[in-house]
Length: 496
Image (tube, rainbow, N blue to C red; front, side, top):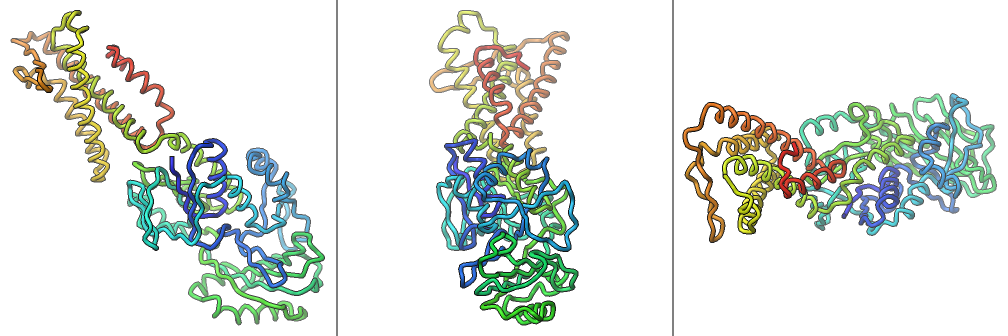
């Protein structure tokens, strides 16, 4: 089973980690358009080896969440990849139920932890996806193409819309409603610990900046050179959404000098722009993830579908686990599922059409020739059902149209004694004649109509099974269908 994860942030790497833990033999591929891992947990390094967190600053959670997602938190805490935040914070409303954590090696170390422990089979950076087909073929802007059995996209909703990706108009419309705030960061690097403040992290009440952190002190690394990061307000970011890092540098530099005139000049400073910083309007009802395509599952996840940036990442990865069952089957096994559905529908219809119409003795029923003919006929009509399903998927026709088609076929098979009274079905060198009814009585007519009604009802049931299975949730009823198929093959045709 080949799975592609697009994006190398927290959502993508935690998903990969969970998949590897629960399905060890899965083949995982990860692509990201950036030069390295992190996503919005990326860091910026200074000349003295120090660094600032450009995006995620710290993680806020509570005891309930820590317990519920202990499989995620415990290895991070035990390896000290995540540690309690003990620095001096000013301007934040504290709660006794909340706990703050930081990553001493930088926020992107969380991503690297899951990336390393997921044992990704193929990781490629600077790989920007431009198109995905309903059959699972993924194309990059460089022109390279590769096919996958399941695709997970964790990019922000606006970037998903930039891809040529199959999805319904309803989903596209909802994705277009998702909005993000834009923010800039102003980053300063000193050559030694020099700043004197009563706080290490501060939330500001300013029209330009909302947050400032002396990063080495936030991580309790007081002996390292000071490095500072400022985050602008979302209002400022929206006002200057078209601004570049170069055009915004002087404005932000002047503002910092105005807020903290006593601070010495840094050894270096720069600006970073987050076009998609934090979700302001999430996907409707916060579903956690959305299935964009059904034939080859294409799943979109991330904070676009949860609103919150941190703790819901773990919820979201758990939601994706519901798709793990489909990960055990390759494209060939999906074809087998289609064929299995076709065989179930065929044998059910054949039993109703032939079992009631062809007077067969016990000896002829046991004969190998009749068995061969029966199963040959089954395979032919099974192929018809499978090809019909594939045709409707390829043409993207509605499920209602497919329902009507299958129902019509069910009706035809039910009433076939009336239409096929003198018909012969040629199979290779032998013929299987359908015996006609002569002058049926009123009672037999009622029985025929009753049989037709139930055959149509069964066609509806088969249709919904087809739709259910093609959505990738095969595991729940896989055993049931196998037993059903065996029962039909052994002659227990009243299973429904």
